Amino acid sequence: MNSPRAPRRAARLILALSVGLGLGLGAGALAQSTGAVAPRTYAVKDKDGTSLPAYTIPDDTAIFRHPDAEAILYGQRLLNETRRLLPDHVGAAMNCSSCHVMQGKKPLGAPFINTYNSFPQVNPRAGREMTLEERINGCMIRSMNGKKLPADSREMQAMVAYMKWLAQDVPHGARVQIKNGSPIDMDLVPDPARGRAIYGRQCASCHGADGEGRKDARGHIVFPPLWGGESFNIGAGLARTYKAAAFIYDNMPMGVHTDGAWGEGRTLSQQDAVDVAEFFTHMPRPDFPLKDKDWPSGKKPKDARY
Figure 1 (cartoon, rainbow, N blue to C red):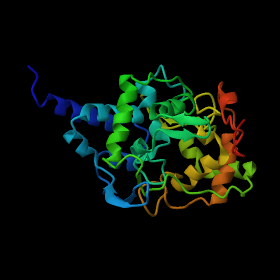
Figure 2: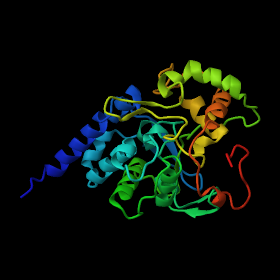
Figure 3: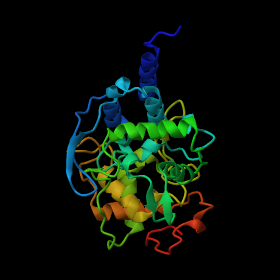
Figure 4: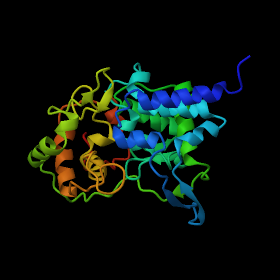
């Protein structure tokens, strides 16, 4: 007979592996994944604007006390090690956490904190309402340049379980008052030649002189490629200049920070971020075969790649 402590031991092993197997997230993220970064608390507003109990970004050790701990931890691993664990579904040298910083916990780093409670929702690019599983698969075929996962697969349901846990029982439709990213002035005119120079000074040491990214000795992703055959395709959100600029402005360069946990030193101005984004987003990258299906209403953003 299995010991009643076996699931908990398995969950701890999964977390240890998740932290130790080359996540490509940097020291700040590793500190977050082990609970070393102090929790931060945010206001919560219901759909009608009513204030609800505050939300605190949870420590991963709390997962062990959850009845669905193994699924949650497996989902977390999949987000951190997407390429390694899902080789048949990921064509790019990318992990979900390459863009969703600190396992989806970082303010201004595309956090997952409101994700579970925001779906289903209308997606303007698709022109219809989408489920959370469909939205995840959108990332699989765009940012991962790969293939969809079956909606009822163990892997898909594990990722959903992690996002549900991260919501921490905030009611559906309510929102934690945390920002996904800063608004970028879309009237800024990009200068790709200037962006190339900024890339060489601020980005190439991690992402490579030719945008090829960095891997460790085991071939695991440390820093993702920003262009080329192993990067995200033209259908990805980060292939758009101003979308990429917002992420750069809030989070890069990763190792430079005077405030906060990750790249929050405001080393780059918004103009810098727009210029470097224009440079690398327009470098060669894979096509997106379904691009003719996007923005059926015709309301295409001005920085769309097609």
